[in-house]
Amino acid sequence: NKIFNLKEGFYRDKDELQRGFIKEKEDLTSALAFKEGSIRELERQSDELRKENDQARKQFDALSKDVVKAKQDGADIQKRYEQVCIERDDLRRKGEKLTSDLTELESSKGEKLKELSSMLDSERAKHAKDGADIQKRYEQVCIERDDLRRKGEKLTSNLTELESSKGAKLKELSS
Image 1 (cartoon, helix red, strand yellow):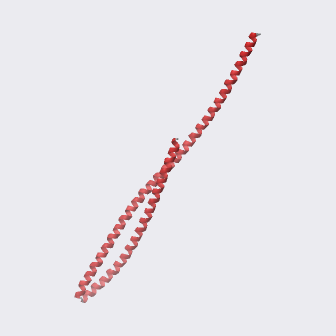
Image 2 (spheres, rainbow, N blue to C red):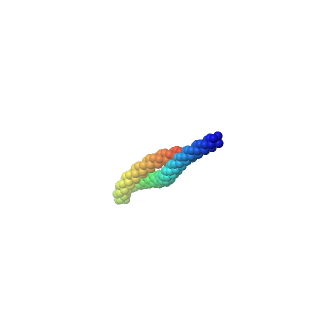
Image 3 (tube, rainbow, N blue to C red):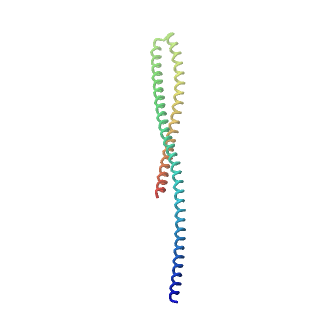
């Protein structure tokens, strides 16, 4: 009877241990499945962040190219502005020379004076028209310069914002 009780106790303990092992195995399997799901979710989020980072990098590259182009356009406008100033100064000197020549010729009067006066009037009209054209070109160059300056400032602002966003995303991805 004692052996029977010991045997029965042994089987009961064995069954209890097996149930405990099975429950522990189920708990560990459930925890493992949960961890695997978490890992898959983190991998998905990581892929999304990589895509966003790639898109941000492409935008950054495009904005960088725009900034370079805006700087080049600004340099071109500056060169055109300098040319307009040179042309304006040349026209002013020509006008002064014509006025000087006219003054010199007025002293000798006569037919030559009439001819030169006519030429001077023609040149003055031409220079007045050229001066108006140069003034218009000058105003256009100033408008273009101001537009490019604003675009450059906006591009610089966008570039700074993208760099800041990129840093935050990389920090977020690191952690």
